[in-house]
Image 1 (cartoon, rainbow, N blue to C red):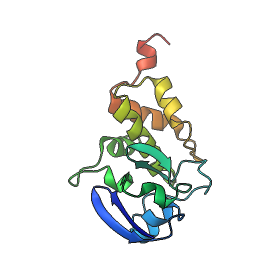
Image 2: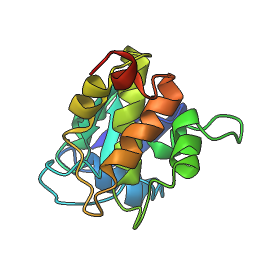
Image 3: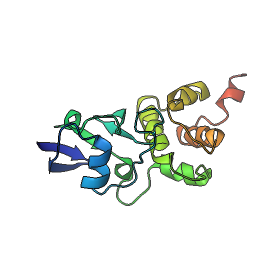
Image 4: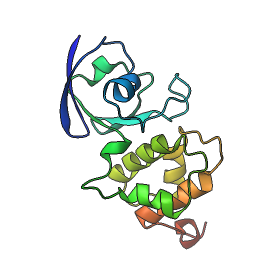
Length: 160
């Protein structure tokens, strides 16, 4: 199947089966290895990318759903050689241990901040719930997102 989509701002034409998971097209056909395979069932969030600005699990999203759409991967968050603020916050807060889930975590956090630039701690926790981290760095993930949002310590400020 001939397919056209835009990946990280670049128009791409591919010849792939329409039911091929978007994850494998991104990784194998386009060579963008930042998006990870985790569970293969859309449950862990390691494969999260944005499809027309919405987070999707690329392991369970057929590539035909991306036809004519804009796909953003972790590689597409940085601009002009500069890390996205969330990518830098992940470094500053020493978030990753094994690092495997982190691209999906960052993509979910980027979607949250694009739609809610000043989320509360509860908003952050709710938005990140679908992304699993086997190393358990959840408190550092929340701290990194808060630092970008400028809401660090907001629970204490609100008297929570």
